[in-house]
Image (cartoon, rainbow, N blue to C red; front, top):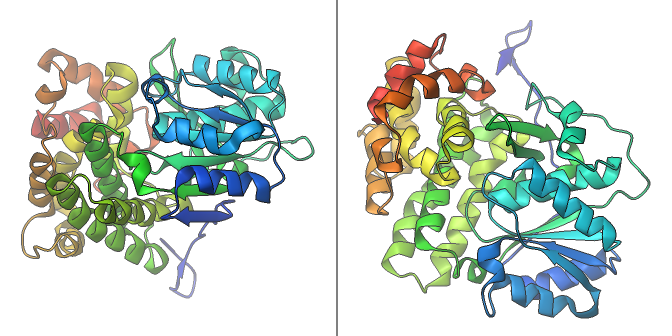
Length: 395
């Protein structure tokens, strides 16, 4: 948060192009109603192979509810949203003459569908065609010459990664194994559907590690120097909800109430980031782990967030105290509380636990410096040696 000439805080709170959040309603019912509301007659669905293989999971329930309005499904989007999948999905939606996209899944599906919109708007037909639209600054607004009535999307969350609440799309460049940012205000879905029943088919490990990803959103946006009174309460409320809901889901997996509470938590936790508050080293190193080493999106936060909090405490220990209070244990280090939360959910807490070899740490440190959130960390990171210190804590 910057200071103006009269010492008052100044900044910008970006408001997403999200129109509605529908919660506690069956996903099929909600999507069909939203398609009707916006006048869509040719709805194209995106998802993953795992959801497509269900007999009657969230994907199939939405397809059935759409009836004749459902004109096709592209269900082969891979983890970390490769450009190739984005282009192939856009081509399938174009061939179906779709007028609305519906993403059903987690962050990889939702990010890929956001970028599919870009391909459909601008007529991009190959992974190479996407290159001019890669952003160096993932927090900078982008202007594009759009067609009349550009196609938009609806998102149905099956994990807790919360990609549906932002206008950023993280897409992997397969040739270089790097995660790249694409952004436009209209990438944000017109409608987000939070149906806790849609998470019942999600494997426990995936739900819990993306829940820690949501915790990471709350923690890193709260600790960022650009945080302000318009965002701080959202970060802390999201963290409090998640810290309570995730263990409750583990104790009673069939209870929908804590699942909905966790969905509210991820929504609150991502809101500061969606408004323009950056994250930090946990996210940035996580991008390098995901794109460069194939570590699952949520597991990067499980492993890196406790280590980053511990390393940052040298400069922001006081700032971290409200995080501990939000997690119900004031007076204890936030890094310890996050690590215990991760362990209580049976998720990995070390780089060794996600298959990273010690001889890869130097490459990981160097790759991490290429990601903007690392450079915006509360404790300045100036070299690969600084990143290596964090990696050693996570080792």
